[in-house]
Structures are given as structure tokens and as C-alpha cells.
Image (cartoon, rainbow, N blue to C red; front, side):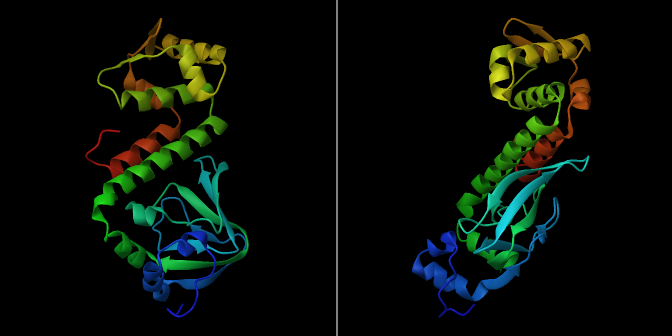
Length: 237
């Protein structure tokens, strides 16, 4: 797109200061986004960011079993491919065009150059990507996995942020966090206790066998842990 052209209406680009729009204009390419086109795959290297104009893109998380769930949609209000400017360069989700249309795209090289103008933000952006991964994974986990596995995932993520193996937490509070009935948490905790993985007394959960808990947990804990370790290698997660 030539610098003299007015950028098509993507709200993020339209909100940029005029000087930034002029600098970006030569690097923005208008592209067709046909129905079903995969813009990037889970774990794949992303080569462009996309700013939809009339297209709509679904962000999907795909489980190891092949089951998937939509975690977000992006249209002319946003951008697809945030991992590129957050510093991760890949993400556990897949981006698929769900409504055909047009958009703008910019190469990975140029969007990264733009963000190198603000090096102080890099660590915060990497943390943001890791946090978004956790949010998406939790949503998918709550939809597809048993309460036993959800509880294992929740316990492990909590332990990663604490010193020691004890959590001060009531079953009622856990139920509220997982969005389930307290009776379900009671049954799941009893199952883990009978398996020798935890010990539960009023308001205190002690993890007795962390490797056993990890083995019993679903894939979701591992996905989140790997993303935190990859994006923030000096931060325990």
C-alpha cells in the first residue's frame, strides 16, 4: 500500500497517530482472506500479523484428542498474530478465517522492528502472552476435562506460585474458582486423597505426591507451564 493511500478501515490502524500510519503504510499489504484459510497453526512460526477489515478470524485451541474450542474472535477491531510482537513468535492456538473478506498484513520482521522502538515493554508483553495462554487453556480445560483433572491442574498452577507443598484454601473457594458445585470439588479431592496424592483437612491441602499429581493432570497444565518457561525463563511459573 502506498503512503499516499488512506488505510482501509481497521480500527487499530485508524487509531494510530498520523506519523505512525505514514510509516506503516508501505509495509501494509491488502490481502484476501477466504473462508477456512488457516493463518497460522498451533506451535507454528508466524510470518505475518493480520489486521482484518471485512473478514472475521476465529482463534481455536485444539486438544491432543482433536477436540477444539473457540477462545476468541477477531474482526476489524483488532489484530491476529499478537505472539509476533509479544516476543513469543508462536502460540498454542490456531487462527482460521470464519467469515471471508479482506484484511491488511504486515511481515513479522517489520512488526518486530516497530516494537523494538519500545524495548522496555518486551518483558511485559511476553508475560501478557503467557497469561493469555493460561486464560485460554483454563477455558478449554473447564469445557473438555473432568473435574478431577481440572483440580489437578489448579493445584499444580497454585503450587508453582508458592513455596512449599501446602495451600490454605477451602473447597468452597476452589469451587467458586472452577465454577462448579462444592460437592463436586469434595468428591474430586477425596479421589485424590484416596490415591495418596494429597491430604486435605479443614482449609489446608497438602500435596504429598507432586509427580503423581502431574501424571494425573490433563495436558493443560503442561501447556501453560511450557509457555511460562519459554517466554519468561527467569520467572518461576
